[in-house]
Length: 207
Image (cartoon, rainbow, N blue to C red; front, side, top):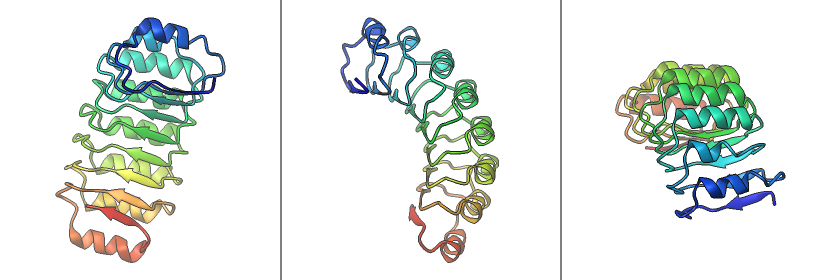
């Protein structure tokens, strides 16, 4: 068994994850909305390349530290609306340097230091969702732009501290960028959007 999707199976507990941990060939696991699992359960997971923990409300930074240690070959991780902070995200970025897709959608405690660590360690990032991470600033965007040359899609929806400077850093440097969601970014102006359009006419904006 290589792929397992138990999304919204809300009676799965840490005991179930202990059994799943015995699947030696499992690489892709979707645990979205499995509300009973905790840091203890995900400690059983090893050698994954794709992991979805969206809305698993009991998972914290401590759990991410364990995930990072046990799954260094992760290429995709999704952490929507978790009670995590920069320390947890940084531990993942430092240990899982093959990451290509990361979502920390609505993880409101995640800030610039997480993305700076990602830029430093995960240079193969292609898809990044940081929507509603309201602590992020242009500094994070500039770090990603400088180091992550394979970036194709980024969602910065409602990141209200990001300005034209962050937008232009991404557009000017990330030549593979094809889509950007900047809805609700009130400090990004129409002037900057038009300027980016002239630089990269194929870039699609959601705003």
